[in-house]
Length: 233
View 1 (cartoon, helix red, strand yellow):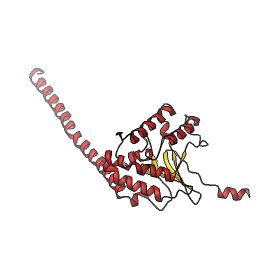
View 2: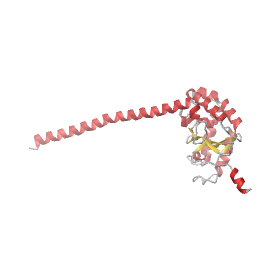
View 3: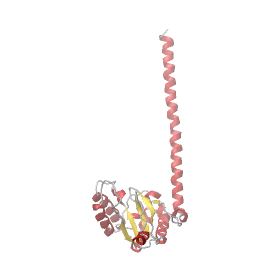
View 4: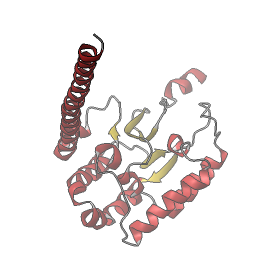
């Protein structure tokens, strides 16, 4: 009997970054999206003040010198309520972040159709909380963001994949967000192109600077030679 229970025990994942994960129908846990600090914008749109209070209670008990692996700082959101809450904030995204609206729609749809067997969306924000000097400071920042959403006041966020929905998690799921979201692919492509262009510009800037150094060295050498010729003889 004990061995049977062991076989049916859900397989837990190693979470070494902030993430959204799901407990799936086959008993596996799968990371859907990974994030860092600051927390991806879309994740915050799933939350209300009660969720933030629940997270605060978890983080107050968590070790501050790194997770020892035994403590689970994640919270579970009611999937339906969280997605309805996020959908109701769509106009906020449309008003302040229109370039991210297509990505937001795709992300919400992907979250809707993903396998959350127990109908809970799990958020593990432990690693992000460690970038603050205490949990209270971290929670206060999240609460301020929620207040701005509900008060229809703009908050600053980075309009990148990492800053909006987060990086797609490494899991065994056949259904991949990158395959179903053209907006996700476009933003990633622009980020890569922008990085390439920045490297090109940086490379171009180095040549004039190097040329100036060469000119100065040649001028100094010519001056030294002239001084030697006229005064050193």
